[in-house]
Image (cartoon, rainbow, N blue to C red):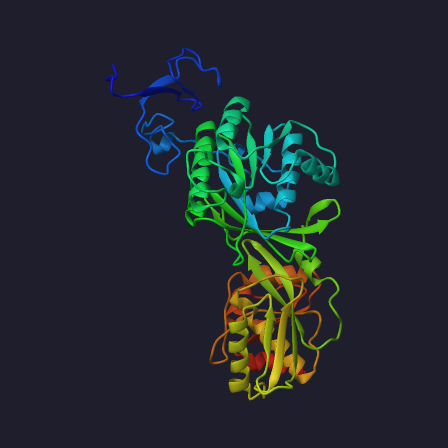
Length: 457
């Protein structure tokens, strides 16, 4: 029997429901004889949890834990499932960040519509929009069916009570910076409020088996606002990238405890919401000019997906004493390095030329495999000689002008052949590994000088 100086609470080991007294049947999950006694320890300063644990701590053998693909719930959006690793894991916590107006709320509302139509029970909780505003956005997306409920609330205590009583499968919190924990001092969005609010939601997610999507505001640097520990606490961190004025959107996973962090999802913003782009290579290459100098096609690997990109370069005589170098989508420092290699190893007079490099479509790529295509585009523009529009180039360029091998060359070449490309410039070591591929001619090169010689032909 507990000492009179100690306070105890009873909680259900099946669902985490708390009670001041023992009960034979849990009113939340209806399990019998599931309540166990737990000592209440004083809450630490700044902590919103008063119970040391919400479920019994019993060691489990690793071999006794079963896993199956059926445990995942499909979001109904193939590109989102790809980034998540195959679907939403029950009891997981997913943080979605991105610039204002990029489409975070639209994407999650679309996912809610698809999952509700498949029989999932969902609650969309908004701390920023009214119910009428959400309904107006929902009407633009199409017809909603199934069990989807809306709630405008910022008090975490009230939200916790609702989640315990409603027992939804999936919850969306929009956004975490608007949530308020009454037991923690500070204004909404402060470091302490964001940290402790996330801790409360994490406890609810794990104890009740609810998958929770959290929308997070971002800073001007593009990272989620609030403490860095926020990204460590959640299971998955997704960033929605792209220019809000452009039609494309990229969903990129930077952390995923249940899958790869190299996958990306590509969307197009339309009048009726976000539309999946199943073939981003064809989409990004649409509208490419024919017989224009300074344009070369490259291939980047994002996760398991090869994506063809158009590299554009414009080189012209500078009108000032110091040449201007500008980049959109590629690393500017890497471009300056490549231009220095071209000037030193090939003798090109680029020191008094302005140079502008762009990855068409607004993609942001940092993979070194684009080096060779960027170098060829710069030289093509400088010499005003067009490159074959059906030619693909990839490879990493070193400071000595050598072209080094890159990963997965066969996937890159087959993706190009699928879209009608007939020629490919690649590192010699990659050509030796690939061999011959029907429908496309390979040009193995050892140095950037060999690749530039193909432009003059």
